[in-house]
Every structure is written in C-alpha cells, then in structure tokens.
Length: 164
Image 1 (cartoon, rainbow, N blue to C red):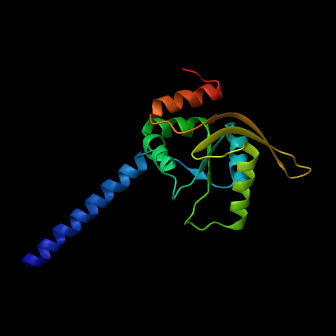
Image 2: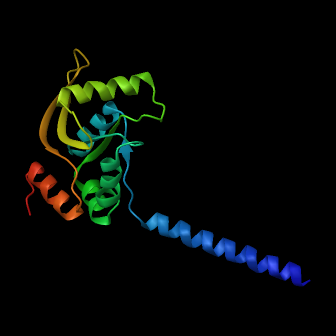
Image 3: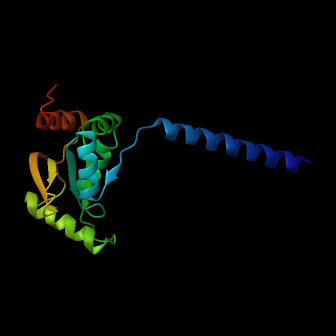
C-alpha cells in the first residue's frame, strides 16, 4: 500500500513537472533558422523582411558558438530577429554530415559574399529571376562577433535603417 501511494505521488509530480516545462516552452519565443536559401527567399518576400545569413562552423568555431550563446540566445535578440529578419544558417561543419546540395549552396553563398572567416553575418535581400531561376542578392550590410546583444541589435538596426 505504501509503495503504491509513493509511486502515485512520484507519477503525479512527474506529470506536474512535465506540464510546467511544456507551458514554459510554449510561452518562450524561439528562433527558427532555415538552411535553404530558396525557403528563406520565399519567407522574405511573404513577410517583407531581409535575410540574415549567418555563416558559421557550428561544430568547431568557438567564436560562432559564443555568438550564439552571448547574442542569439538572448530574449532581446530573439524578439528583434522574429520582428525584423528571416534567419538563414549557412553552416560549414567539420563533423556533421550535410547533403551535397546544401554544401554547394553554402559554398556558393560564401563565394558570393566573399566570406573568409567565421562568424560572419550578411543581411541581404534576394530577388529570383524567374526566367533563369537564379537568385540575385543585394547586400545591405555585414556583422561579425559581438559580445553584447544590445550592441549587436544596434549595429543590425543601422544596417536596416532602423537606428534607435
């Protein structure tokens, strides 16, 4: 009898904790990172927002990992990004497998923007030439690692012409 009551209490606490964690996750804004330029382009056109291209080495670049922790994971940045840009991750991992198509897309964008180091962020607009299917990109501005999300947002707003 005591064992049954004990397991009932444990089970009840498990459900309570699970419900709490679920409700916290639903209330927390999150970032959606796209990996396809085509998908980011479509969303950019639908929402009237430029693309925020984050060139990273996700599994080896220490500064990229720090940028994600110091800036991209902060509530102010999450709110800013969701309101102002479409996020596109352009990853160059060493240990994580990628499709050949994704690798080629990322290399093409790296060459188009002249990216030589990581992390590099280019904010840009895209237009698709329907007759050729090629994407025309127009750069708005470039950012790199910044330790503080407030400074990062301020610099990004300058690029977007939304200086505060």
